[in-house]
Amino acid sequence: METMVKAWKEAGINKAIMTFSCGGDSMYDWNYEYFDEDHNEITSKFELEQELEDETFKRVEFYVNSDGHYMGESGTVEIALNDEEDDFEFAKYSESEWNENVDTEVYIDLNEEQTNFAKNYMLQIQGTGDDAPAIDYSKNFILTDELKAIEQSIFDKVVIVAENTTPDINEEVSDYFDFIAEFCNDHNKLKLTVTNQYYKYVQE
Image 1 (cartoon, rainbow, N blue to C red):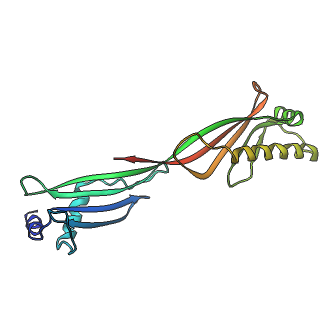
Image 2 (image 1 turned 180 degrees about the horizontal axis):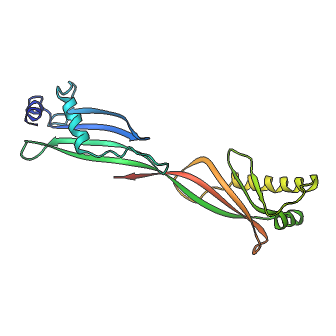
Image 3 (image 1 turned 90 degrees about the horizontal axis):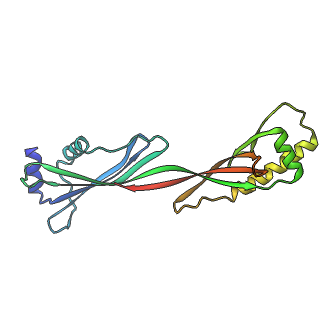
């Protein structure tokens, strides 16, 4: 540490800023910039940057492990000598990215044929913005051409409503969504639940 502190002072460095990004179970990228006491950038590379890098990763925790909910973080680490000028202080400022879900419920009107089909044969309809809807039936029956046409008309309604349903939030919503539709006896309608994904950013 004494050698690194000495080299730091000799190089006229007042502060270093490490810019980084990480996630997906790894560090993506990082680099160091150096500044003198007048905040001017020192363009020459610190001769002991590798040792400084080792010390940074030893003292600063970077959250690299993504889990589908937490995506990663990016930001800076400010490095300067302590008051005694015999060691370094590290301060991390970051923004983390999170993948969140939000559900929106809407009700879909059905005509008489569609209502009878939903009551008699349907448990639920599931689908995504990328895949055609699939139905879970409530019992075994023969799906005639007439019933198939009614089923398809319900699919068409569900898909159109799902595609045009957006959550009432101010966040950045991704294009991907999935949905579940169930017949609601209380309303005599289909209850459609659309799940959207959005990205939330948290300052740390």
